[in-house]
Length: 90
Length: 203
Image (cartoon, rainbow over all chains, first blue to last red; front, side, top):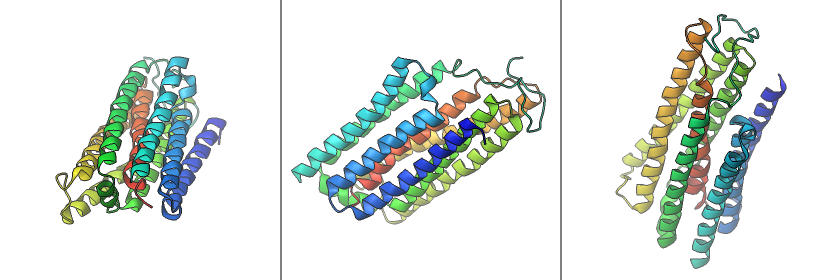
């Protein structure tokens, strides 16, 4: 297996493991905020791995790279932030 | 004809090479716009969830987390196989690329089976988009994503056809990378939809 394929396969293994980890966290972490933080945090990392390894974002121009990294982080922070406010209010 | 090949075996063929991200600015602009659109969807869903958290939590607990997780694994695996196909094209190995693309299509098709089964189970339980606002969002968000997915399946089929035509020297392969990027976007969007709909209330 050549190096790009090895990297993509390693990324796939990581994504599968991370998905199973978020599933485990949802079932085993009791505190709602812990479940939210872990599942959204894992989702953001998975998105960045797909962008870097499958979509090869690293080959794009800096503005586009910043846009997509920014999008991933903003979506995660937004979901996390609103969910935190909701959890505190209930 | 640029990027056309005239061989059908798995040997490296330097005549088949994708230009490295040189011809896909349009698809990146489209993906960026779609990502912004979905980010707005996420924001609206989360702010509506804030108004009725108990209703959203109770409703979300009726979703089958395992079905959501299986579909996540399906999209991840399909995306990986399509990425491998593009790498094989870049390496000038069209036969290998075709095998990966066909596998990616086969694995990706499973998403529809599980998604339709999930929709059917919900409807059988009397749950529809009008049941409550959570389920309105559930059906709209997953429905819009499913539409993207169906277009993606069509794109993968077209990519497979184009690759076969390229092997016989009848067509170029310039746009294959754009097709693959679209398919990865379908995966990307689901990676946020899955925890937002299925996992936030699983405590």
